[in-house]
Length: 374
Ligand SMILES: Cc1ncc(COP(=O)(O)O)c(C=O)c1O
Image (cartoon, rainbow, N blue to C red):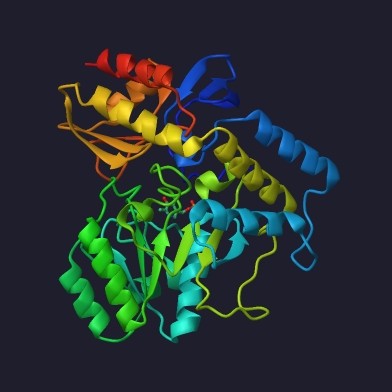
């Protein structure tokens, strides 16, 4: 049976990886400045991560959510400490799309409304039916979903207020920094006004921190740069350093009841072991400090390249904008220079999402190789 052909592939088959390096089946080493869509947070096959997962699989890999799982409790105790969301609760699932789907569902149950306000060029995952939120024409949302989602321009608070004033919006969902869309970010003034507008109108504010969260911006959550709080925060990607795990942090306003949300695999033992290993390394290796330090170094260094028009993003979620489309440059970096980078809806943007453990030396290697492409 062949695979359903939905992914254009680069002809590289990674076989093993360590830190920021990936080796293919021929033994060629690649420097990873993309981390499989921004998933690798503490570095590939980090020894603490491997130890936690291996020990766990030797005990028990999975059992259902109808038993006590102390690893979930441990994660639930640690997350408030690192995120500052002390009184929030945690619902665990398996992916970003699922996290957002649960966030939107919960908002809808809570408000008794179903319409969602999202932003142009946003990406919140390929969810089914009622909650596919995207205005990207490449990702065709089901018709009924499009009818239920209203899209506003980022930073256009007046239109947001007008839409909310109609009284039928359940929730606003927004990425603090747009990932797939091309690293645009709302202004601080916009975010603070958005928070206020949602609060005064009983609209649930959902911050999608699936890509920009979990340390990638230099703070645990990117929206913390804007001094705002959300009612629900969705997580995935870096949370498991490659192991599929997602979740939502839920404000105490929401009252749980049995059966309200649910999942078979969400919060399984192995996924929790992976997520706990990530948080342990965040603590022992001062990951957030490394993000801030390497980000400043990266921006300083790459700003000297005359071909770069603009550097977008924050922390280690960066986009190098050129005057030309970057598809060929990206191919050259992968096949000739053996460096993975990413792309975005903005075709002139080279997206950089390295492991949060990236070093100055590795940034220098990218710089030298990129420079030699011109
Ligand atoms: C901001 C954002 N939200 C949601 C998703 C969907 O996550 P997943 O692919 O795990 O379903 C992504 C994936 O790229 C994302 O970047």
